[in-house]
Image (cartoon, rainbow, N blue to C red):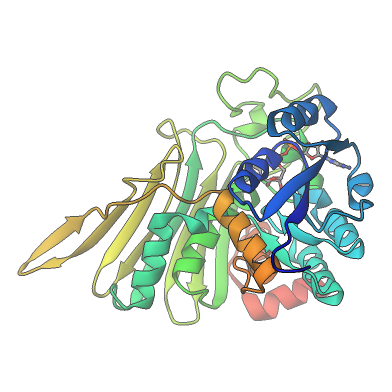
Amino acid sequence: MGQQEQLRVGIIGCGAGIFHLEGYQSEPRAKVVALAGLDTDRCESLAKKFDIPRIYREYQDLLAQDDIDAVSVAVPNILHLPVALAAFEAGKHVLIEKPLARNAEEGVKMVEAAKAHGKLLGISFQRRTRHDVQLLRQQFEAGTFGRVYYSKAWWMRRSGIPGLGTWFTSKEAAGGGPLIDLGVHVLDMILYVLGNPKVVSVSASTYAEIGTQGKGGWVGQKRQKLKENQEYEVEDLATAFIRFEDGGTLLLEASWAAFTEMGDDFGIQIYGSKGGARIFSKDYALTDTLDVYSGFGDTTMDSKPRLVATGGHAEIIRGFVNAILEGKPLSPEGHEGLDRVRLIDAIYRSAELGREILIDQEIVDAAAD
Ligand SMILES: NC(=O)c1ccc[n+]([C@@H]2O[C@H](COP(=O)([O-])OP(=O)(O)OC[C@H]3O[C@@H](n4cnc5c(N)ncnc54)[C@H](O)[C@@H]3O)[C@@H](O)[C@H]2O)c1
């Protein structure tokens, strides 16, 4: 495609697909020309709102359109692999929603298919583009914090199981609970800030204590109930202690439902030999979220850098379009999505075994089982 041409995009999935539609609105070099989704009413109202000329039900029908260059894929996790493979087969670039896939085995197939077809595989780790995360990444790299030896990443909801009784709470359809849904975002934030340190071991536990009682859905949303005799199949809280090759460690917590203060809060924290910092985002705040801990003369100093509100799908889409049209390096991309899913696999494996596991050895052993 010539450099001046406009990219033609299809959106598959009419739930989180709206974030992509909004993102493409601020990208003049791309135009959304089609939508696909089984929930026709929701797709029709999106098509109307965003003035999209074509709607399909099945993703295969959208992918059969020759004039579409790239697709955003926002479907249940179980479909990430088949939709991405079909899209590459049809010659499209793919921007996939997080998590990359339900597990690393699927993720590898997606990364390999992108390579085999010479197409790009982007992933919506949009929180990485937040101003607070970008600042920490730059300052980590500049050595501001000295040696960062300890870190935390968390996303804790009091009552926010998405879609109780839908694909979200099916192990088969989702691959897991809050760890793969929310944990993947904060894992990406912290590992990105720390420059993707090599993980050597993981000790984790998962719990299903609230969802299994049929409780913990979004407060006030009537539709989210388990059906009669339907089981809640995934965890509602996960915690992990992760060791890096350089001796540093990371503590992770992710919950959809837990008896704690009301909120939907996420963040990361780093502890270094010369300074530290914490991002704490309450209810998705984008500004006033960063605290930096340093020294000043013979005393301590806490400061709050002034932030601008960035960090949505628009930034991810700009990077995706830049990569397709201008050949700029794509970040975040498939490999990073795969790294995160590999770590998530290890966390679930450790929780299942009830002990610490060594990544290189035991994950390879598990894959061979
Ligand atoms: N990046 C983020 O912040 C973010 C936020 C929410 C969801 N997500 C991710 O987006 C994905 C979808 O989540 P959701 O909340 O939108 O789920 P959802 O259930 O609300 O929507 C799923 C969509 O997929 C469509 N779909 C299912 N099967 C299809 C098929 N065969 N052909 C065409 N369309 C089909 C459905 O019709 C629906 O429109 C998940 O992977 C989730 O993790 C990401």
